[in-house]
Image 1 (cartoon, rainbow, N blue to C red):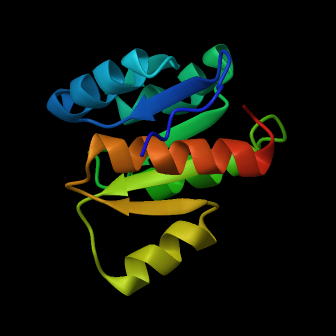
Image 2 (cartoon, rainbow, N blue to C red):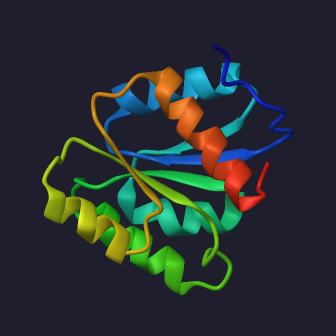
Length: 133
């Protein structure tokens, strides 16, 4: 079963402090037809988002200096990003972390490790459900 949809020029911002992860995700999403920008410094995430204007954001939770919850909260408080879907990618698994993800404004929570195919399926579903494809 193929999860490829007509995504046009959907833009994805990937924020994770681990280049090994962002390289894999970027390569896979590039091949799927997305415009992908990676940011490995959490301190720069909000500014990069403002400049890139993503349709969807993939955001790690556990990062140095600024965690994903704070980045998500900062983005969602900005009217420019209030409706931009944010998917947390995380090694965390506890239900309170999932609850905190949603309370900070996240739309989905994907546990690492994940398959790129599953990630693509979720991105497509979120983009379709929000009309951002």
